[in-house]
Amino acid sequence: MNRRTFLQAASAVALPFSRAMGANDRIRVGFIGMGGRAKWLIGYNMPGTEIVAVADCHFPRCFEAAKVRPDAEKWTKYQDYRKMLDREKLDVVFVETTTHARVLIAMTALERGLDVYAEKPVSLTIAEGRTLANAVKKTNRVLQVGTQQRSMPYNMFASKLVRDGAIGKIHTVLACNFEPGKAWVPQEAQPVPEGLDWDLWCNQTELRPYHHDLQYKWSSWWDYDGGGQSWGVSGWGTHALDQVQAALGTDNTGPVEMWPEEPGEQARVTMRYASGTLLKIAGVARPDHSDLGAIFQGENGQIEIKRGISETNRPELFKDAPDPTVEGFGEDFYHLNNFFACVRSRKAPNATAETGHRATTVCHLVNITRQVGRKLKWDPVAEQFADDPQANKLLWRPRRKGYELPVLKA
Image 1 (tube, one colour):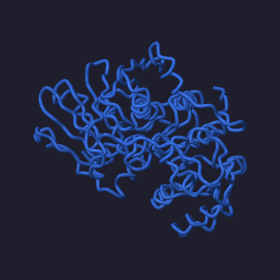
Image 2: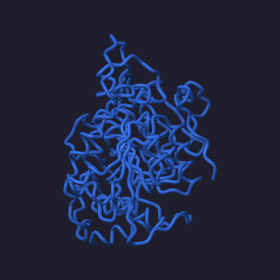
Image 3: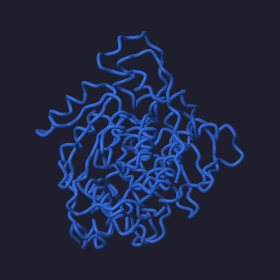
């Protein structure tokens, strides 16, 4: 099966009509957050698109990122993303910011009628993620979450094998034991770097005194992420647990029960789905980067879905598999191509806001289970814990005044 066939099949579900673009119309793109991930993505130079504006609350980063592209001189550069959204005639924005700022920025873009590519994890809390997913439905916009394994041909092929019962009913799924976030210990204040709007950077969180580690190691701290530093739960763990959701076919639901296997901040966690399938967050904490997936154990065999490749004791199942996805260029190309194709067609992308929210919810549930240290019963429809006020308090966080989420109209 070739790449074109996969991309056509991946865009088969139609969204309600919102806005049509001609095949020759150029898609005008804005980027918000110009750190390392943005620099990687802007290097793709996707056909039929043009970057017209970029924004970062640490303004010098806009100029640093511009060195990646020879056409960057024409970009309009902003420190405040809100001014960019007000002034520029954009079709799409990429939200490549810290996790704690992501949902507010994405919803602001949706409110202005734009389509959005939002990095993972898609939310800081479960309640925040639900608000974003609902906003996408209300506005009929296209939002692609940056879980790019959803678009890798090999991963799509292997996921379908598992979903279609090629190895029988899945009784157990094994994933890595991903690391939690850490609590910030107050440090002596440091001077705010020139060109940084620290208030805007802090966004919904407490306006703490500036410290270099807060800005540059933000994904390590609970206030800004759920454990996003590489092998953290909501860092690379998002890719693995999204892979679990994709292969199990649970894009609109999640586990119903979860418990820690021992006490501790990085306790192994077991989750049970309504089907009886057990998801065990219990493997080696820091395996190879290619292992950002999971092992699916069924009645009739085993398949380990990794990033762009797979291993199995049923090799005959892969005789018609596409070529493995090359790490680097290939892993993002398919996902970006799918996103821009959906911007034109108004069809649902491979990683919708709903599927991204559900996968990120699994990450949050791992953290909450470790925090309360006992068995929990989860209602994936109501998105509440059963008879557990303590656990339900962990579904959301208060937001700082001036950074409330907008209420979007349909």
